[in-house]
Image (cartoon, rainbow, N blue to C red; front, side, top):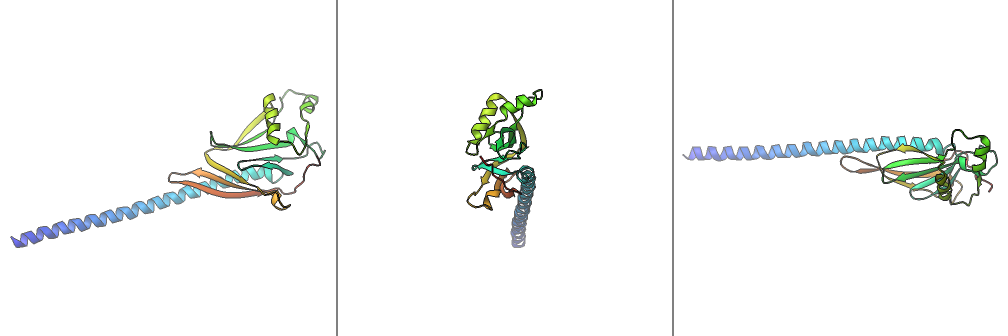
Amino acid sequence: MRSRGLALVELLLAIAITSMITAAVAGITTAVARSQEFENDRRESTVRAQAVNARLAGYITPSLCILNATPSTFVLWLDDSRLSQTVHGTEIRWFSFNSLTGTLELKYVDFPAGWTQEQKDEYDVVWPNISDWWTVLSFYEGLGFISTIRLSDGVAGFAVDYDSSTTKNKKILTFTTTFTGKLANHDVVTSSSVREYQEPIA
């Protein structure tokens, strides 16, 4: 009877130890899987942020001047197509983060396709460099002359860092883009700069 009792106790101990080992292995396996999933999320966020930065750089690098920047928006003087060294409406590009749709958006002046050059010139006026550039956008939006390009979707957050205190810094825009992963949000920092900086004369 004592041998049978000891055998039963040994069996129960063996079962308990096996259960503990199984639980430990399962915990380790789960932790490794979650860690791998987290890294996959981070890697995907990095790739997406680099793609966003490439699209932004496609506008920033060849542009002439960063007209304005806030914590979530910026405005570019894209080119001087009139060769006037002044900013016309069609030369401006507005960039912003739409938190409601989770998208990065680019807006620009876009006149009706059937307009003559004279009609376009009437509204493609010069805007002084001291202008509130978002008021300029509102002016053209009120007329129905603004088109929007979606640069990226699935964005949880977008922050702009801009320092205009020095000649070198005023060429650079730094972005912190946040994407939502399965396990956590991931912030990725990128930057782009104007190749040849030129401010408007007025």
